[in-house]
Amino acid sequence: MEKVIEIDGKEVKFRATAAIPRLYRIKFGRDIIQDMFALKNAIQCAEKEKKTIPVEILTVFENIAYIMAKHADPDMEAKDVGEWLDNFSAFSIYIIFPQLFDLWKENIRTIATAKKKAAPSTEK
Image (spheres, rainbow, N blue to C red):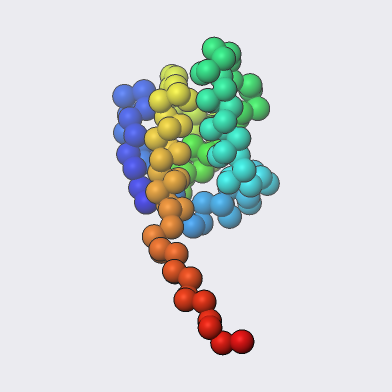
C-alpha cells in the first residue's frame, strides 16, 4: 500500500508492506507494531489532556515516518532520520500520523472472513 502525503509543501510517498516490521526492527531494533499503538495512545492522551507528546514518542514517530518513506523511495538521498527531517521546516505529528496509521491499518487489515463453526456433531 502506498500513500502520498503533503509535508511542508512537498509531496512525500509512504509505503507499508509486510516488509516494514522487518525493516524497522533491523534499522531501529524495535517492534513497529508495539510502537504504532504506543504512539497512537500517546497522541490520543496528549490531545485529550492538552499536554505535549513526550520526546521518546516523537522519536518513534520520526522513525516510523522515515522507514515508510524510505521503503517507498529506496533511492532516497537521506541516509538517516535526521537527514530526512532536514528536508522539512516543520510538520505536525497530529496531521501526519493519522494518515500513516491509516496506511498501516490498511496494510495489515485481514481480508479473510472467519469460517463458521461446523454444526455440532450428534455422534457420541
